[in-house]
Length: 268
Image (cartoon, rainbow, N blue to C red):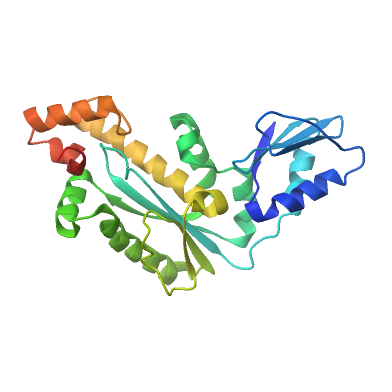
């Protein structure tokens, strides 16, 4: 069994290719956009853009399907972040460069929404992606985040500045044909820059954004683990009740270390 990421603009192309193969029949699969089988191999596409290939001759069909997906004419970049909605840990921004020769291999890793992935899957996919992309990061520690938030007054404006620097670095180092960013704000800080796409739900549209999200999440998770080891505290993820209770307790009893562990805007 293998899974592939199919870009949205190529879903119809892949469907037509599979449907036209000799002996292929459509079948019904719950929660799938469509599914086909030739009696030996099964092809099922889900709304996430992940195509599951099962049965016999999987490697052969994976290769044939990837051949149907055009490779970008030049390098493309994608950017996303991790930690924005998490009480504890840093804010991590990541941009990745995907060169044409690596584009289909990135699709082969099946990058998808990190919110649907468990920790182990994030770490595994990050290792698969690292040899295929060039990644650049901005890692903002909780204490630095708290200081910057006092300056900017708004998380999105803070991120505007951080992304502007990161995008400039990507342009200077790699000159990608386009840079796609998963929109984190209604206001586009890159208005007028034709080569920079700032799109809502960009992670669903651009595999390079999904790749950046995975690498950002991996770095966030490893940073969180280091904080646990440094301060000897088990840190819950997210912004749920357990995380909020620990945050309030730290603010009340350990004001000396609270700013090193958590984003203070969650408890003000």
